[in-house]
Length: 212
Image (cartoon, rainbow, N blue to C red; front, side, top):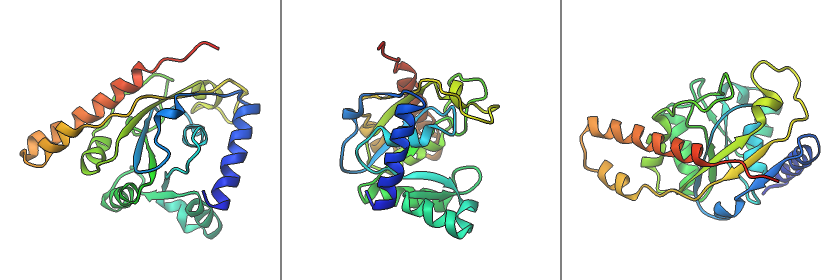
């Protein structure tokens, strides 16, 4: 971690521990080194730093490209390993940066649902994460957050002191689908992207909160 990232990481950990009384489970499932995709459900703006703060390694984050146009904000986001993406969260440029970060041994947080849930329930996965997984060689760790919708959902202006939980599952590899994707036709390749996304979302759904 660089100094800026460590300061932010520490501040977020303090905030989650005090204001939100957080719980972290399964962090040992995430490798401390090497490329890894953290695939999480998405309920709140609290989710990205929550997923990253639960780990003792630095992680790359996605941030809207327009934010990088502001000198101070842009510099801060870059120091926090943020990846600029277009408004829809994809695009060839963003994908290349993500793959380069993974190839260089970085970890990155992706949201299979594509956007925050409107009702607190898990949403269907979009195929975009499947494309990223297939084009990379990184393991995928399913992650589920609990309580962030109740703490700071879409319609809330101020976060409430509700307990939040982050749980990391066992890594997923997708070797057979990655091998098949190298030789299959375009129709099958498109289906593989969605299959990978659906399998990741199913793994997220299986992660249940643990009793204190």
